[in-house]
Length: 114
Image 1 (cartoon, rainbow, N blue to C red):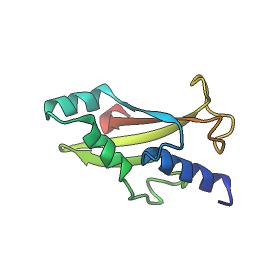
Image 2: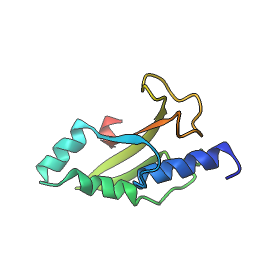
Image 3: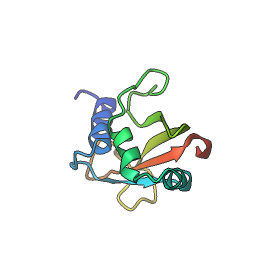
Image 4: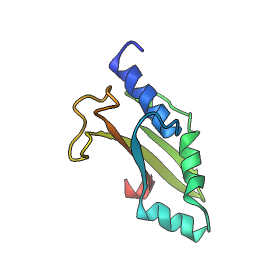
């Protein structure tokens, strides 16, 4: 890894794909929860979709950090977004390349909730 973007992208991918070496948490919005309930589906269905997402383009990933994606679930357009916070989750991280100082929050939402 040669630059900040490469490091952030690698850490985001490791976290999103569930490798366990990068700390963080996954949240789903009330819209996603309602969609899952309406279809009798488990949250893992949506989480697996996000984990396997690999269609990054210049348009949906302009900074090359793999911190955003869009997909469809049950006929609804959905987004996921990774934000990088400090350890107390009260501000953005001072060093997004340092996993000891960065806590990732992956939010999965309906596009209409963005």
